[in-house]
Length: 448
Ligand SMILES: Cc1ncc(COP(=O)(O)O)c(C=O)c1O
Image (cartoon, rainbow, N blue to C red; front, side, top):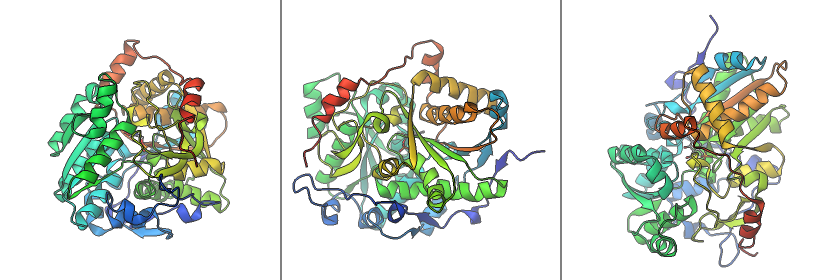
């Protein structure tokens, strides 16, 4: 019988994360202080982040130890299985081999706890008692509530209004893990109140929710801010996905020709991809395909520029692909892919033509997700459906080409069934973000 799943023992879990920053050709541009336009001083960021994470954010070291306490919590679900999608391959009639790393087996159903646990740990170590954060789809918020509950911290989550309404059970999951959740914009912050005054019916956006969480952290003692994607330290934590996958691919006797992932802020894709990028930089011929929605085409239509990470213009300026910090996307169901920017690490790898970005439409992603469920037996998160669609495009472009495809199954969709219901009822539509709206947003980019 052929091997379906490759499972590592707990003592085979990686003991270090991989930091790609020192290996990126032509390097990363530093974050800038929006006032002075000079590189931002770490002390300024220390108001909302612990030093342990800031050191990782700026570290010149390739390898960073994973503390034992974090590995203990990871053991609840890690190492995560690598699975060969035989039935999907058969259904597609392709000679390609398709593997996926199943991050949906975590306590809240996605890759997000890989960083949430690390962030809760480093904050706790420095005496912080409460974290404030934003969440789009609810995956990051529920991951952080799980993680803070493991380390005895409180957690306040600003959840983008449209997801708050669409995903009531994510809210319940956060409450189960002892978190407090409000719809963003909320009446709890100056930023939230200002946005509500402008438009009481606003669907909210990740950019607004980030501004609210940062304000909360900056104005409450003992509270820090936690971000679920985009930043270097988040991608660092997510590299455990790719490091495990490398060991598992070796056991399978294979190596990926193509690595595929969906891209919101870039963390699940980069987490899987960058350990393989390290090999590509040394000559391996692997392609890296980042898949984003056509309704939020950050890499394919946005500009590589310095921009704010939030709508309220409170963060340092990051050099990244951006649609403009005032971007408010239509309420497509893949809530976790609706961020206006892209991780500086992913943006730099796109700039260096190492990552190939593609955009796909909503309906083709659900079609891919349903095929995956009917063949492989797992209902994927709507975000993940983008990665599956990307993998299917790769596997069917040349049906007789025996290539090896690896994608990140970043989460299951068991709390996203209302989106599937709308899909089956014909209530979902494709939407391409208009070029004119992007042009308009570009006018508001900070001037350097
Ligand atoms: C299941 C899932 N996949 C992917 C993403 C996108 O985030 P990132 O690009 O940081 O991995 C999210 C974000 O919420 C998510 O919940």
